[in-house]
Image (cartoon, rainbow, N blue to C red):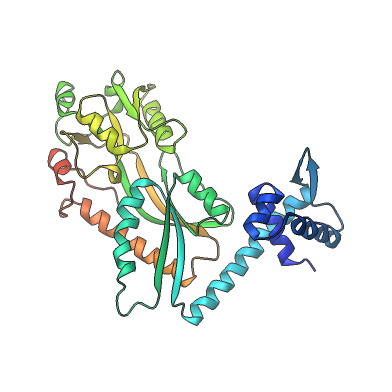
Length: 333
C-alpha cells in the first residue's frame, strides 16, 4: 500500500520544483526528502523521479502519482475540515492573497468584524493579508503559502483554477470606459452613453503594465473593436490611471471596483457596446472550504461583496458618488 506521507512529499516536490524548496515547505531536511522518495520508488517498483542536470524531474510514473495524490490529499483535507467543524472550531488563522482593489474593498471592510466579532460568533479569526495579482495569488495557494486567494477573471480572459483548487464567485462588475468629459463631448458622447471602443481607435490609452491580466483584457477588448491601443502611459495603480484620465492624458478601461474614492478632476464613465465583465472569486484548496475558519472568512467575503454591490447601485450612497453623478452606470449582476 502506498504511504500517503510519501505521496505528499512527491506532490510538494512537483509543486515547489526542487528538493530544497520542498524540504523547506515541509520543515524537513533535503536528505529526508530524498529518503522518502527512494522509499516511494521501492513501494512502486519504478522510478518516480529522474535527474535532469542538477535537479530532479518527475517521470511519467511520478506525474501519474501526483495526479492521484492531489485527489487523495484533497479528500484528507476535507476529512480534517469535517472533524474541525464537528469540534466547533473556536479560533483560526487564515492567510489571504488578494489583488489590490479586492484587498481594499472586500478584505479591509471585514477586518473590524474580525477584531470585534458578534457575541453569537462560533469562531474568532486572525487574518494575514498579502497583496498579489491573480496569477501570483493562485501560485501562492498552490504552494500552500496562503489558504485563500481572491482573484478575478474577465469575460474576454476567463480565469482557470489550478488542479486541486475550487472557487466561489463573490461578485461581477462591469469594465467601464473612462474619458475626460471634454474628450467625451468632442466625440459626441453624452453622460452615461454606451460607447463602441472603435470610436477611440486614435486615442492615447492608459493601461496597467504588460504581463498583467488587466493589460491583456484591454488588448483583447480593443482588438475585438478592430484596433491595437496606442499605449501612452502605464501604471499598476488604477487610481493613477484615473488621475491621468482626469488630467486629459488619454482613455482607460477601469473595472468598477478599481475606481478611487476621489480624483483631482472629473471623469466621464461609460458602459461598453461589447460589454466586458470582471468576475471576482474566492479560491481555496479542494477540501478546505469546510474548515471553520475558512468557511467563516468565505461568509464574510460574501457579505462584503454584497455590500460593495449595494454601494455601487443607484440606491446606494457610495463614496464614489461623484463618479455616479457624471455617469450613472448600474453594476452587472
